[in-house]
Length: 219
Ligand code: AMP
Image (tube, rainbow, N blue to C red; front, side, top):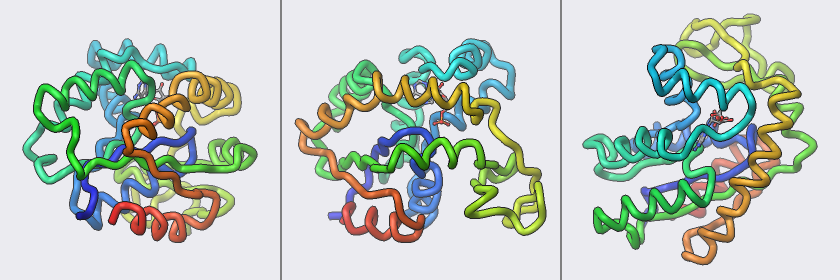
């Protein structure tokens, strides 16, 4: 049976966004991108967005309850009835436990459709990826100025939207994000390994190769 309740783990710029976006389209499962949802709250100037921004600008995790409330609503929504692809949640043991409780309460904690995919990337290339990353304001397509530049500078190939650099994609904030990842998120690999959900994928290669490896693991 194909796994359709997916969680992606991996450090900032490990390719979670690129891979989950593609999988979501091909498998017709909602891509629940935590960072994007938080950035939308900031853009809409909501109370949650104002709180989130303070943490995001510091490269720290937004409080677990705030994030969990947004994500869990999505997991139990109509559009996720056949499964979902979680990108960027959970990011700490505390968040994973909130999720487990919510799934348990719904009788879905031990589903054999669940899988946790950890992307393994050489640390040296991550910072380089971050400072060169640009995203489309309109469709969220991700570019890299060195390895995957747009055809026209500053313009999205796919939709013509304007490209931008995330405010947290600078060296200083990125370094803090790596520290946060090591301290808070990396322990999730053992957490999910013990539950029997974890698989690892070498994500150093070309995005298309990484994608094929992911496909082979979810089947
Ligand atoms: P991302 O777009 O996944 O790189 O996330 C950008 C930022 O959003 C992170 O550095 C955090 O500040 C915040 N964020 C994203 N996901 C979470 C989460 N699950 N828990 C707390 N904060 C998060």
